[in-house]
Image (tube, rainbow, N blue to C red; front, side):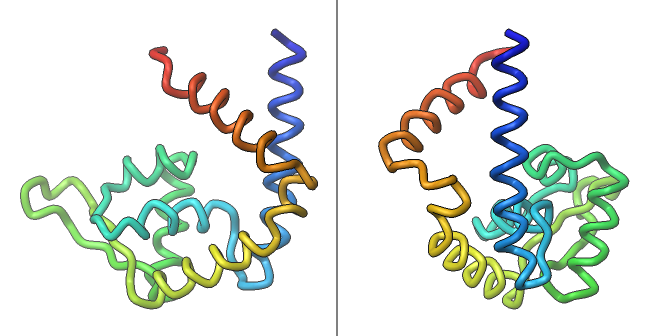
Amino acid sequence: MQRLAQLLSHAERRVIRRLGGVLEDEGCTVEQWRTLVLLADGATHSMSEIGEFALLPPPTLTRLIDRMVAENLAYRKVDSLDRRRVLVHISRRGRALHNRLAERIERNRDAILAEAGGAEVAQLTALLNNLAQRPR
């Protein structure tokens, strides 16, 4: 079990480092990219949803959303039904950035995934998805 955890962590770090290199040309972080991916679905999301999806603790997420709002990549508003909740949705500029980054990531897919073949990536994705979907 320890070896599996170590291998997963090592692989994740290498992929994230390569992904970060692709994103930095646009001045984007991996955390910002994860947030844009969620917001790109066009729905309005709560901060807790975004934090869970982007793997960020609340204080870090708040700073990230503050920057994204300042850069006009997202809009934030208070939930009219529950004034304690903050809702976020993507702006037109945020969507354009998401689209540019998605194209850049796709062009650099082989480098990001260390030249792994499509069948290998599909198999790994299926296995990880299966593990992630299991009840805790």
